[in-house]
Image (cartoon, rainbow, N blue to C red; front, side, top):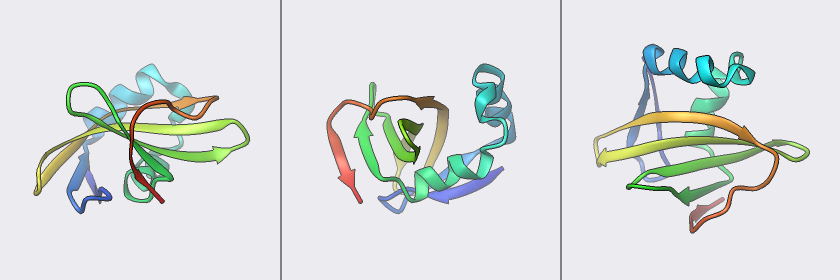
Length: 98
């Protein structure tokens, strides 16, 4: 298990079990473990997601966005839900911008 800190200072954990689930569904992220953690800790923007989730987003190239969906349970705990790549900037209410 690895931990990074969100822009709100909340520790966000990424377990290896969750990581295997992510790459099972998004094999294009197989070599991006640390990029996923870095996106939560140093995003370009954070967008409000569904059901209390947040989406940390980072531009990783021309027309390529890494999106990491996570949840902050409290000021002391949170976890990564999933991650994926988009070819357009994510839409939604921006709650934090670099």
